[in-house]
Image 1: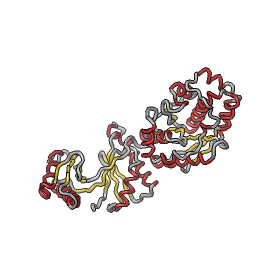
Image 2: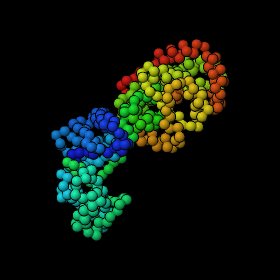
Image 3: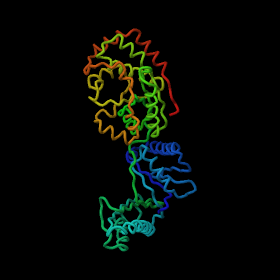
Image 4: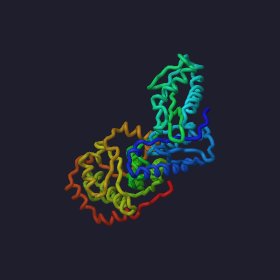
Length: 405
């Protein structure tokens, strides 16, 4: 087995940034260190080096197979990374590169030839040091020629899905050789675009909305609504577990838990049942805005998908949105359920979300909710609620905050 002492992380979108690119790189480095601490991966150094992030062990020790696997899992959660590879390092000289590339590839090819008559192969080269004597394509050809000299007809070229792929990067002070490339989550480093508040339920969609918002560089705080004693406290524990899972991708966000039951009873006792769902959501948005102002959060995030349920028709979303001046982000609004499920599986929230527990939206739910509520009718219904502003303030003051998730 190769003794890897370094892992090279590549980014894509960060590279398009201008003079503030270093800020994004520094955030990515800080996030990798943070995620490593979450996973109790110790003794790592994380450094920027001209378009790459390098991860090494202190004292320049080689990674064990278990350490490589743990780092691979950790980097799959590091927003901002496009791909990464365990790499071997050598001097940026032609013979050194050819010897190292051929030596390690030969070991892989020989092992495969024990089970098959021929092995497919490709090489990929990139040079950031333009003083290197060979162009990228010429270096690829030299690597292939070196291996062809060893294996001859048993080695076949396949540029799309080869059995063995050798990658080379030639830099000014070092050359990298690698044989595996793993996909990162892409996007921008979580936290580089400010803090937002997500309305987090126990369902599938809102955690996915959180993950997609993190991918665009935001740190996410969470607000959930429950209706104890009409919903069990296990529903809150479920949301806590979902928030804990999402926090594996970012600087840990807080969870705000709001008991909506008193407002729901006021709506039940004073308003037309057909408008209950829309009225509930309007209360949630008002409270979310209050939390945003209190904690200086820049936007509200929801898991709304257009047309999915009664509160998510265009008309109803507009009526609900009308109660806040906050920016409202709806990352999953154009996705169908299967797409959302796939993303939830990738995030690791799906198995938590499908645990069957009631949430606050089901409390006193009408048999036939309005799907195209008119503004003037909804506003008229709200005027029937006695001391609404006082009730909102009392509900806001009763919010519980959970910091350690």
